[in-house]
Image (cartoon, rainbow over all chains, first blue to last red; front, side):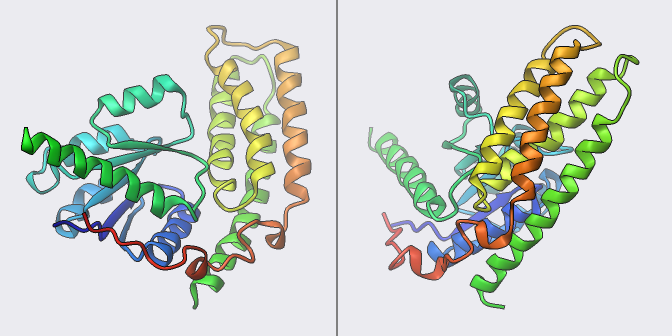
Length: 136
Length: 132
């Protein structure tokens, strides 16, 4: 039995971090860890042990895909589902991000009221897929 | 500070940020055209406008985000061109789209955010059972 409780959000925009934190904590009841950059995520997320990582694609310095690649190299985070947030939600971009191993893609601007439910849906599907793979 | 107050503080801060973004865009647009730095200018504009598109809709300013998205799309098409200097019509279109964005931002106030009167503690109803 597994619960979605801890969500990390890596985002360089301070307002988006703050709104997402309120929505995820107040609506979803999640423990939320915010990171302002990919470098901060790499430093702090192993000890936070998130159940799911929400990653902005376009950030100065390490972008979302590069951050995910680094996080994937860490044993503690190698299998943690990651969801990208991007303003470019074209089919090509979405496909490319999923090919990188993302569990889902959320378009910017996102509705903060819906964000907890959207992440829960993605996470639930990820867990079901994992369970199905284990059964086979 | 309650989350409702915190949300309003974020919205108010975002309004000030939008005004600052407009000033930054105006400063970039004031660069002289055709001096070989058009690509840098467009890159800088695209970054500033991209930030507005991505953030404003989430903060509850959907019209700002929509208008910004139009300008961002135009800037992206310019950015993807091979030429270093852009045509007068390209530049004029960018200026016109920015003027529209500036007008929309001038009409922004915290109370006009769709989130201003939203209490996130109540909109979600009971917290969902996240257990599988």
